[in-house]
Length: 355
Image (cartoon, rainbow, N blue to C red; front, side, top):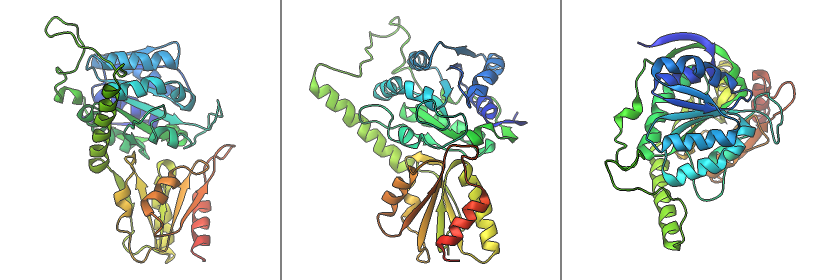
Protein backbone atom coordinates (compact mmCIF):
# COMPACT_ATOMS: atom_id res chain seq x y z
CA UNK A 1 0.00 0.00 0.00
CA UNK A 2 1.02 3.63 -0.43
CA UNK A 3 3.06 5.11 2.41
CA UNK A 4 3.40 8.67 3.69
CA UNK A 5 6.99 9.67 4.41
CA UNK A 6 8.71 12.76 5.80
CA UNK A 7 12.10 12.94 4.11
CA UNK A 8 14.33 14.83 1.70
CA UNK A 9 13.09 14.95 -1.88
CA UNK A 10 16.24 13.11 -2.98
CA UNK A 11 15.13 10.29 -0.70
CA UNK A 12 11.60 10.54 -2.08
CA UNK A 13 13.11 10.10 -5.53
CA UNK A 14 14.83 6.93 -4.37
CA UNK A 15 11.68 5.56 -2.74
CA UNK A 16 9.69 6.27 -5.90
CA UNK A 17 12.28 4.56 -8.11
CA UNK A 18 12.31 1.43 -5.95
CA UNK A 19 8.52 1.26 -5.67
CA UNK A 20 8.04 1.66 -9.42
CA UNK A 21 10.17 -1.38 -10.24
CA UNK A 22 13.77 -0.21 -10.70
CA UNK A 23 16.01 -3.26 -10.27
CA UNK A 24 19.46 -1.69 -10.52
CA UNK A 25 20.75 1.73 -9.55
CA UNK A 26 24.30 2.67 -10.53
CA UNK A 27 25.77 5.89 -9.13
CA UNK A 28 28.83 7.79 -7.96
CA UNK A 29 28.64 10.18 -4.99
CA UNK A 30 28.06 13.85 -5.82
CA UNK A 31 26.28 16.66 -3.97
CA UNK A 32 23.33 17.31 -3.99
CA UNK A 33 22.35 13.88 -5.38
CA UNK A 34 24.23 11.49 -3.08
CA UNK A 35 21.22 10.91 -0.82
CA UNK A 36 19.52 9.04 -3.67
CA UNK A 37 22.20 6.35 -3.89
CA UNK A 38 22.49 6.12 -0.10
CA UNK A 39 18.75 5.52 0.23
CA UNK A 40 18.72 3.06 -2.67
CA UNK A 41 21.52 1.05 -1.08
CA UNK A 42 19.27 0.49 1.93
CA UNK A 43 15.86 -0.03 0.36
CA UNK A 44 16.44 -1.56 -3.09
CA UNK A 45 17.31 -5.07 -1.84
CA UNK A 46 13.85 -5.16 -0.21
CA UNK A 47 12.37 -5.01 -3.70
CA UNK A 48 14.74 -7.55 -5.23
CA UNK A 49 17.17 -4.99 -6.62
CA UNK A 50 20.67 -3.72 -5.96
CA UNK A 51 22.52 -0.39 -5.82
CA UNK A 52 26.11 -0.40 -7.03
CA UNK A 53 28.61 2.42 -6.51
CA UNK A 54 30.89 2.68 -9.52
CA UNK A 55 34.38 4.18 -9.78
CA UNK A 56 33.28 7.17 -11.90
CA UNK A 57 30.35 8.66 -13.76
CA UNK A 58 31.78 7.22 -16.98
CA UNK A 59 31.52 3.76 -15.46
CA UNK A 60 28.04 4.58 -14.16
CA UNK A 61 26.64 5.52 -17.55
CA UNK A 62 28.24 2.50 -19.24
CA UNK A 63 26.74 0.20 -16.61
CA UNK A 64 23.31 1.79 -17.07
CA UNK A 65 23.51 1.26 -20.82
CA UNK A 66 24.61 -2.36 -20.38
CA UNK A 67 21.85 -3.18 -17.91
CA UNK A 68 19.23 -1.43 -20.07
CA UNK A 69 20.17 -3.72 -22.97
CA UNK A 70 18.69 -6.64 -21.06
CA UNK A 71 15.28 -4.94 -20.79
CA UNK A 72 15.70 -4.42 -17.04
CA UNK A 73 14.45 -1.19 -15.47
CA UNK A 74 17.60 0.67 -14.41
CA UNK A 75 18.36 4.15 -13.08
CA UNK A 76 21.09 6.55 -12.02
CA UNK A 77 21.35 9.83 -10.13
CA UNK A 78 23.94 12.57 -10.41
CA UNK A 79 24.56 16.31 -10.52
CA UNK A 80 25.89 18.68 -13.20
CA UNK A 81 29.60 17.68 -13.30
CA UNK A 82 28.69 13.99 -13.32
CA UNK A 83 25.92 14.53 -15.86
CA UNK A 84 28.54 16.10 -18.17
CA UNK A 85 30.52 12.88 -18.14
CA UNK A 86 27.51 10.69 -18.90
CA UNK A 87 26.56 12.36 -22.17
CA UNK A 88 28.32 9.95 -24.54
CA UNK A 89 26.54 6.93 -23.07
CA UNK A 90 23.19 8.75 -22.98
CA UNK A 91 23.58 9.62 -26.67
CA UNK A 92 24.37 5.97 -27.36
CA UNK A 93 21.25 4.86 -25.48
CA UNK A 94 19.11 7.24 -27.52
CA UNK A 95 20.55 5.90 -30.79
CA UNK A 96 20.12 2.32 -29.56
CA UNK A 97 16.55 2.82 -28.24
CA UNK A 98 17.33 1.86 -24.63
CA UNK A 99 15.12 2.93 -21.70
CA UNK A 100 16.30 4.14 -18.29
CA UNK A 101 15.57 6.78 -15.63
CA UNK A 102 18.11 9.52 -14.84
CA UNK A 103 18.17 12.25 -12.19
CA UNK A 104 20.20 15.43 -12.55
CA UNK A 105 20.11 17.29 -9.24
CA UNK A 106 21.27 20.64 -10.59
CA UNK A 107 23.91 22.80 -8.93
CA UNK A 108 25.91 25.88 -9.85
CA UNK A 109 28.49 25.58 -12.65
CA UNK A 110 30.35 25.64 -14.97
CA UNK A 111 33.23 23.40 -13.97
CA UNK A 112 32.84 21.99 -10.48
CA UNK A 113 31.05 25.23 -9.57
CA UNK A 114 29.36 25.14 -6.19
CA UNK A 115 27.09 22.66 -4.43
CA UNK A 116 24.20 25.12 -3.98
CA UNK A 117 21.12 24.69 -6.15
CA UNK A 118 20.73 26.07 -9.66
CA UNK A 119 18.86 25.48 -12.92
CA UNK A 120 21.86 25.98 -15.19
CA UNK A 121 21.67 22.51 -16.78
CA UNK A 122 18.56 23.41 -18.79
CA UNK A 123 20.35 23.63 -22.14
CA UNK A 124 22.24 20.38 -21.59
CA UNK A 125 19.06 18.61 -20.48
CA UNK A 126 16.76 19.81 -23.26
CA UNK A 127 19.16 19.94 -26.21
CA UNK A 128 20.46 16.39 -25.95
CA UNK A 129 23.72 17.14 -24.15
CA UNK A 130 26.00 15.30 -26.55
CA UNK A 131 26.69 15.32 -30.28
CA UNK A 132 24.13 14.44 -32.88
CA UNK A 133 20.39 14.95 -33.28
CA UNK A 134 18.63 13.47 -30.28
CA UNK A 135 16.48 14.50 -27.34
CA UNK A 136 15.31 12.88 -24.11
CA UNK A 137 12.01 13.55 -22.32
CA UNK A 138 12.75 15.91 -19.42
CA UNK A 139 10.52 16.12 -16.33
CA UNK A 140 10.84 19.00 -13.86
CA UNK A 141 8.89 18.32 -10.64
CA UNK A 142 8.66 21.16 -8.14
CA UNK A 143 8.01 19.17 -4.94
CA UNK A 144 8.23 15.73 -3.39
CA UNK A 145 4.66 14.73 -4.14
CA UNK A 146 5.10 15.55 -7.80
CA UNK A 147 8.26 13.41 -7.90
CA UNK A 148 6.26 10.45 -6.61
CA UNK A 149 3.32 11.14 -8.92
CA UNK A 150 5.49 11.50 -12.03
CA UNK A 151 7.63 8.40 -11.50
CA UNK A 152 5.14 5.84 -12.92
CA UNK A 153 4.64 8.14 -15.90
CA UNK A 154 8.41 8.39 -16.39
CA UNK A 155 8.76 4.60 -16.52
CA UNK A 156 5.94 4.38 -19.05
CA UNK A 157 7.57 7.11 -21.17
CA UNK A 158 10.88 5.22 -21.07
CA UNK A 159 9.36 1.94 -22.23
CA UNK A 160 6.75 3.35 -24.59
CA UNK A 161 9.34 5.30 -26.55
CA UNK A 162 12.44 3.22 -25.66
CA UNK A 163 14.41 6.20 -24.42
CA UNK A 164 16.21 7.55 -21.38
CA UNK A 165 13.92 9.79 -19.34
CA UNK A 166 15.52 12.60 -17.38
CA UNK A 167 14.37 14.27 -14.18
CA UNK A 168 15.89 17.68 -13.46
CA UNK A 169 15.51 19.00 -9.93
CA UNK A 170 17.24 22.12 -8.67
CA UNK A 171 19.40 21.53 -5.61
CA UNK A 172 17.05 23.55 -3.40
CA UNK A 173 14.08 21.32 -4.19
CA UNK A 174 16.29 18.22 -3.95
CA UNK A 175 17.38 19.02 -0.41
CA UNK A 176 13.96 20.16 0.83
CA UNK A 177 12.42 17.89 3.48
CA UNK A 178 8.65 17.50 3.27
CA UNK A 179 5.76 15.06 3.54
CA UNK A 180 5.07 12.87 0.52
CA UNK A 181 2.85 9.89 -0.15
CA UNK A 182 4.83 7.41 -2.23
CA UNK A 183 3.23 4.63 -4.29
CA UNK A 184 2.94 0.96 -3.49
CA UNK A 185 5.38 -1.34 -5.28
CA UNK A 186 4.54 -1.98 -8.93
CA UNK A 187 6.95 -2.89 -11.71
CA UNK A 188 5.62 -0.62 -14.44
CA UNK A 189 8.21 -1.88 -16.91
CA UNK A 190 6.60 -5.34 -16.73
CA UNK A 191 3.61 -3.94 -18.61
CA UNK A 192 5.72 -3.76 -21.77
CA UNK A 193 6.91 -6.60 -24.01
CA UNK A 194 10.69 -6.29 -24.33
CA UNK A 195 11.29 -9.66 -25.94
CA UNK A 196 11.69 -8.17 -29.39
CA UNK A 197 14.70 -6.06 -28.49
CA UNK A 198 16.25 -7.18 -25.18
CA UNK A 199 19.69 -8.84 -25.25
CA UNK A 200 19.77 -12.07 -23.26
CA UNK A 201 22.00 -14.36 -25.30
CA UNK A 202 21.13 -16.35 -28.41
CA UNK A 203 19.66 -19.51 -26.93
CA UNK A 204 16.09 -18.65 -27.92
CA UNK A 205 16.55 -16.28 -30.85
CA UNK A 206 19.00 -15.45 -33.65
CA UNK A 207 22.02 -13.26 -33.06
CA UNK A 208 21.25 -9.56 -32.61
CA UNK A 209 23.63 -6.68 -33.21
CA UNK A 210 23.39 -3.40 -31.31
CA UNK A 211 24.93 -0.79 -33.59
CA UNK A 212 24.51 2.99 -33.55
CA UNK A 213 27.09 3.66 -36.26
CA UNK A 214 27.65 2.22 -39.71
CA UNK A 215 29.97 2.13 -42.68
CA UNK A 216 26.90 2.62 -44.90
CA UNK A 217 25.73 6.24 -44.94
CA UNK A 218 22.18 5.13 -45.69
CA UNK A 219 22.02 3.32 -42.34
CA UNK A 220 22.98 6.47 -40.45
CA UNK A 221 20.32 8.41 -42.30
CA UNK A 222 17.67 5.81 -41.46
CA UNK A 223 18.60 5.88 -37.76
CA UNK A 224 18.27 9.65 -37.58
CA UNK A 225 15.00 9.67 -39.48
CA UNK A 226 13.65 7.01 -37.12
CA UNK A 227 14.62 9.18 -34.16
CA UNK A 228 13.14 12.27 -35.80
CA UNK A 229 9.79 10.50 -36.22
CA UNK A 230 9.83 9.31 -32.62
CA UNK A 231 10.57 12.77 -31.27
CA UNK A 232 7.76 14.30 -33.31
CA UNK A 233 5.32 11.88 -31.65
CA UNK A 234 6.70 12.72 -28.20
CA UNK A 235 6.52 16.44 -28.97
CA UNK A 236 2.88 16.17 -29.95
CA UNK A 237 1.64 13.81 -27.23
CA UNK A 238 3.73 14.39 -24.11
CA UNK A 239 3.69 18.12 -23.33
CA UNK A 240 2.81 18.76 -19.67
CA UNK A 241 2.34 21.96 -17.72
CA UNK A 242 0.41 23.52 -14.84
CA UNK A 243 -1.29 26.89 -15.04
CA UNK A 244 -2.93 29.18 -12.51
CA UNK A 245 -5.25 32.17 -13.02
CA UNK A 246 -4.30 32.92 -16.61
CA UNK A 247 -7.85 33.46 -17.93
CA UNK A 248 -7.81 37.25 -17.35
CA UNK A 249 -4.12 37.74 -16.53
CA UNK A 250 -2.38 40.92 -17.63
CA UNK A 251 1.01 39.44 -16.68
CA UNK A 252 1.96 35.77 -16.87
CA UNK A 253 4.95 34.50 -14.90
CA UNK A 254 6.71 31.38 -16.20
CA UNK A 255 9.02 29.31 -13.99
CA UNK A 256 9.89 25.69 -13.19
CA UNK A 257 11.25 23.91 -10.13
CA UNK A 258 11.45 25.88 -6.89
CA UNK A 259 10.46 29.19 -8.49
CA UNK A 260 7.56 27.48 -10.25
CA UNK A 261 6.37 26.31 -6.86
CA UNK A 262 6.76 29.79 -5.40
CA UNK A 263 4.66 31.24 -8.23
CA UNK A 264 1.55 29.75 -6.64
CA UNK A 265 2.04 32.09 -3.68
CA UNK A 266 3.06 34.94 -5.97
CA UNK A 267 -0.24 34.71 -7.85
CA UNK A 268 -2.25 34.38 -4.66
CA UNK A 269 -0.63 37.42 -3.00
CA UNK A 270 -0.75 39.65 -6.09
CA UNK A 271 -4.36 38.71 -6.83
CA UNK A 272 -5.22 39.64 -3.25
CA UNK A 273 -3.78 43.08 -4.02
CA UNK A 274 -5.93 43.40 -7.13
CA UNK A 275 -3.14 42.68 -9.65
CA UNK A 276 -4.13 40.33 -12.45
CA UNK A 277 -1.21 37.93 -12.53
CA UNK A 278 -1.20 34.30 -13.65
CA UNK A 279 1.50 31.66 -14.00
CA UNK A 280 2.50 28.78 -16.25
CA UNK A 281 4.81 26.10 -14.85
CA UNK A 282 6.31 23.72 -17.42
CA UNK A 283 6.36 20.15 -16.10
CA UNK A 284 8.03 18.80 -19.22
CA UNK A 285 11.01 20.90 -20.22
CA UNK A 286 11.26 18.71 -23.31
CA UNK A 287 8.99 18.51 -25.03
CA UNK A 288 8.55 22.15 -24.04
CA UNK A 289 4.82 22.91 -23.54
CA UNK A 290 4.37 25.18 -26.56
CA UNK A 291 0.64 24.42 -26.43
CA UNK A 292 0.38 26.34 -23.15
CA UNK A 293 1.27 29.53 -25.05
CA UNK A 294 -0.86 29.01 -28.17
CA UNK A 295 -4.01 30.69 -26.81
CA UNK A 296 -2.93 33.25 -24.26
CA UNK A 297 -5.73 35.56 -23.06
CA UNK A 298 -6.23 38.84 -24.92
CA UNK A 299 -5.72 40.61 -21.59
CA UNK A 300 -2.09 39.44 -21.34
CA UNK A 301 0.38 42.22 -22.08
CA UNK A 302 3.70 40.64 -21.14
CA UNK A 303 5.47 37.56 -19.77
CA UNK A 304 8.13 37.27 -17.09
CA UNK A 305 10.40 34.22 -16.99
CA UNK A 306 12.12 33.50 -13.66
CA UNK A 307 15.04 31.04 -13.54
CA UNK A 308 18.02 30.10 -11.36
CA UNK A 309 20.46 30.74 -14.22
CA UNK A 310 21.52 33.47 -16.63
CA UNK A 311 18.68 32.83 -19.07
CA UNK A 312 17.98 29.45 -20.67
CA UNK A 313 14.31 28.44 -20.57
CA UNK A 314 13.51 32.01 -21.56
CA UNK A 315 14.66 31.09 -25.09
CA UNK A 316 12.00 28.39 -25.35
CA UNK A 317 9.34 30.75 -24.00
CA UNK A 318 10.26 33.34 -26.62
CA UNK A 319 10.10 30.68 -29.35
CA UNK A 320 6.67 29.57 -28.11
CA UNK A 321 5.35 33.15 -27.91
CA UNK A 322 6.85 33.89 -31.35
CA UNK A 323 7.00 37.67 -30.95
CA UNK A 324 3.35 38.16 -29.97
CA UNK A 325 4.24 39.57 -26.54
CA UNK A 326 7.33 40.96 -24.83
CA UNK A 327 9.13 38.31 -22.75
CA UNK A 328 11.25 39.53 -19.83
CA UNK A 329 13.88 37.59 -17.90
CA UNK A 330 14.67 37.64 -14.18
CA UNK A 331 17.48 35.26 -13.25
CA UNK A 332 20.15 34.66 -10.68
CA UNK A 333 22.53 31.89 -9.64
CA UNK A 334 25.51 31.32 -7.34
CA UNK A 335 26.44 32.75 -3.95
CA UNK A 336 24.81 32.24 -0.58
CA UNK A 337 21.35 32.99 -2.02
CA UNK A 338 21.25 31.44 -5.52
CA UNK A 339 17.50 31.93 -5.86
CA UNK A 340 15.15 34.88 -5.67
CA UNK A 341 12.89 35.25 -2.66
CA UNK A 342 9.14 35.54 -3.09
CA UNK A 343 9.38 39.21 -2.13
CA UNK A 344 11.92 39.85 -4.91
CA UNK A 345 9.76 38.00 -7.43
CA UNK A 346 6.71 40.07 -6.48
CA UNK A 347 8.71 43.29 -6.64
CA UNK A 348 9.97 42.55 -10.15
CA UNK A 349 6.51 41.55 -11.35
CA UNK A 350 5.03 44.75 -9.92
CA UNK A 351 7.79 46.86 -11.49
CA UNK A 352 7.09 45.47 -14.94
CA UNK A 353 3.37 46.06 -14.48
CA UNK A 354 4.14 49.69 -13.62
CA UNK A 355 2.75 49.51 -10.14
